[in-house]
Amino acid sequence: MNILKFRPHLSDKGWFTRAMNYYFDCFFPAGATVCVEISADCNLKCVMCPRGGVHGLVNKRRGMMDIEIFKKIIDKFRDENVRVRELWLANWGEPFLNPLFPEMARYAKSRLTGAKIIAFSNLNCLMDPSAVMSSGLDRLEVSMSGMSQEVYSKNHVGGDIKTVLRNIAGLVSAKKRLRGAMAIAVKFHDYVYNKAEAVLAKDFCRRSGIEFKLARCSVSCVEGNAAFQKEKERFSGFYSRFIDLKKEEKIARTLKTPADCMIKCYMVTIDFDGRLYRCCGVYEEKNLMGSFFDHAIREIPGINSSICDICVKTPISWR
Image (cartoon, rainbow, N blue to C red; front, side, top):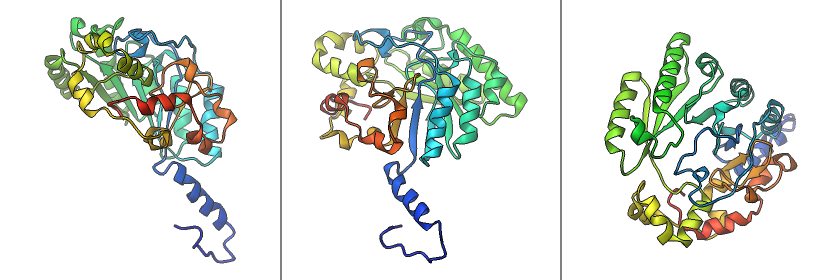
């Protein structure tokens, strides 16, 4: 609809509001993807995650989002009439460390009409499976990289694969008992050393009645990619133990300007205390942009950030 050509009947009092809502939704044409870090803590130190320390990146911010901040975030999207396509309850942290997870998922589901509520977890910890299953969560993706402890722990340092498999079984049991609609997926990291165990994981998922998702892995954050490009000789030996660097280099690309970044246009990423990150691919605390509550949501994609200038010049494979 072109609002400049739209000629409503004079008796239609709500035409202007509807037309302007349509126009403003062009800022998020497919709906916003919102990433909320409800826990800035993690119980693992995965090697391929920036928390693993290979690049020496700095983010010492730790803590749990409280329910009042979470409600304010959700209500702000509703009040400003911004449609949320997906709400991700996790970024660099482990969401199930936050004891308020079920309450948060339930509140988001009740307020964000049509949004898919998704969580990403290493599942080394799990609260009551029934509480998770009945929370309104639409999808849970479980990060895994092996079916044996030897292979799993090469990346998932500090994790226990038996605990993960036991927790998956608990969720599957709760889903059957409660007739839950929540989708459960194993997001299996595709590394150069774990091909045989990917086959085992796929078979486990088939027998458990859950989804298997083979996930291509890469250098995982903007700052990590920038460090890798500057010191390839230093980091190539490390990364070649996990990923096919030749394939990664073939698909990596730069952008002309930050305006060409689709992630910048549709994603809103919020830390546990309400601070903004440019996107879910940014890790270091120095690249935070201020409070989410200080801006109209539709202004956020246009906020300039110095990390964007670094990102567009850096060859990145996951763009």
